[in-house]
Image 1 (cartoon, rainbow, N blue to C red):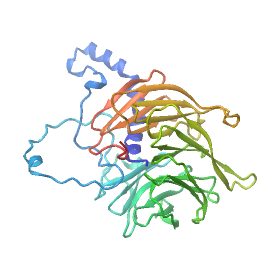
Image 2: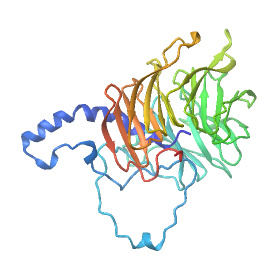
Image 3: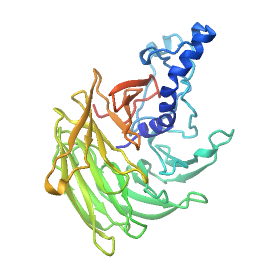
Image 4: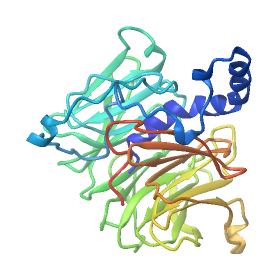
Length: 382
């Protein structure tokens, strides 16, 4: 399930490239001033802030109980926040279960076990009192949330009721357009939208519920497909609403395509068109490059085998041409979450509390942020 990792990555990702490209200039300026304390360091020596971090945690409530040993520990010295930290979202009274940006970056949605979803206007984050809307979910809470590709609809899945709820009118007072039961535990919710009328809601089962289901907005089940990979970790959709990939317990990543009827655009079927084969252990997360203005050409994967791979999926799959692995990055740690910039040039990887950025062309680490947040990034997959 997409997690809190999305919020941390998207806040940091926009300026990470700028920081890297200007590092050389900063070093030169510092040398000229003779200021030893301002010399830039390698990523491994970067400060490790652990105060004033975003209060974002992996999906599902986690309870920590203090004991006498914890109480006896001395207070840690203050460490400055990382220079890329631009804001900390506050206001929820319970653990965060999910977070996401709207496609145009205007809204940030955060779901919590406090039975609310907060829609924060990103443009207001610099003000003393940021602008936000609150969605209340009586007697339940949302485990995951996601925006449609046009940014007009917010979809959530509830925990106890196992229902999908669709909201709109974020600028005024959010209203629930549709709600319907789905009766399975969901890892990922995807809104495959071709206009409001023909939106297809895709739910990816969690853990040993390895079924992927397609629904219309009224709750009619259009298709149910079991991917038969023992355990699902996360499902992702390409930005052009074309492909859906599922990270699962087995090394293979299956990629499905949604077909629509000619003339009407109504849902026709979802079927497997490609498979990524090359990892030697389960795949924990996947992500597509591309955007509204940039074509989808690549998919990135992170696996329990300690490798991160970049795949070229711009192939003639209808002629059974297989995707090609074009880049591989190996590490001593297993990254549980992954994302990629729309242009496919920079990867963001999550491990524990840390975020690492890797350039795709050289597969070299350009930046590491230790203790990016106080809880673990993403889901408990490893």
